[in-house]
Image 1 (cartoon, one colour):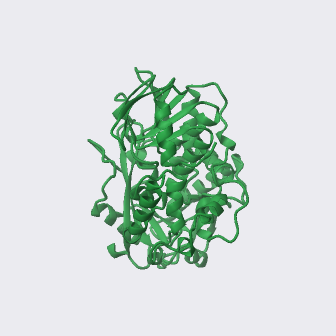
Image 2: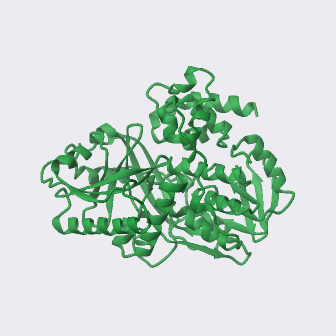
Image 3: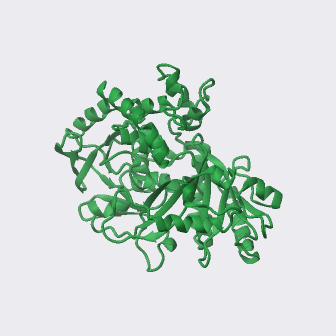
Length: 500
């Protein structure tokens, strides 16, 4: 079956979903829900996924875009979770999404806010993490072993690092996603290729063990979608449909900077937060000349916003903490965008949300519906496996199941950006170009190409201008880019959606 997600397919499959029960109805189009849909469909179950907004609308697009081996969990003594993270990182990097995940050096400057004792602890953590890497079979050709480097190499990796007192750096390696939203779209399209119906703009009004009552946001019509089993995978909002679910959500803020503000680093920079154990601020270099700086971790109470706001004080905290390790302190003018995400932490003991476990849980409520909560992006596949294991005895296949774009030869003669973001599908994306302008940036100073907008509508289920700017291209991470590209995105959405 085709992996292409289009408006016409959505409408057709929504109508079919009202007529006969499917084996599994999944509610939520983030990484957890898309992962559950793929897992179930690849086992041979009939599957419908409904999402009230767009794919990756919530938490799944606001991550640090790391696929990490759980060094932080080692520091808190949770070796089991660290091992699970290392194993799932290996699956992503070598089997399911090697086109979307690349190795990233993570450098911790020594002597710049990191004393001898703390340096020894970080070094020990790196070495234990390397043992886990070897234990799960990730070769050194994918993730090199950790090492300590001298001052000269530290400055090469982190050109903006403060020189005074610098004694070198501890360098470990982890995985970095090209784009978290692109991973979710890849999961959804791969699920669709295995027969799943992926229905965005369909809100679940209520769920039970035999289906859900839903409303089509595009028409306003309501319907009943029958199913033999239901999984609520709505993340931090899971308690809306399953009130018995207990969560302690927290908010994590990132600031997006020009890479030139930090000297265009080639490694991630890690700076400890003064006065707090096992808490750091990271500066993560990304393609297109950006660095993402994060992460705050603050509990939230009361009704949760769909798009969390970012306070000036939160950005100032990130800039001040990172500036302590830089030769030239950062200013607010260096910030070109901000974003915040909500973590669906399972409620536990009192204390900092930063200390709560990132383990997941699968529970069943009185209605018979299952709820998947907790966890993190790196371990989405294992989370999905555990959820689908509750509803079928068929064996899981996702450990060795590549996502769309992950297999086949990489095309030649197409822009490198397309290969980086679409893998083996880059040639198909480029083929949508009507003329040379479609293979050029959509606006001056903007990295996205015109064909990416066309592909978002033709293949990836985008139904609006905001879907294109926010989640298919991520232009909205930089305010000026989104403003400049909006006319092109509006034109692409209007042209292609009207032609369906």
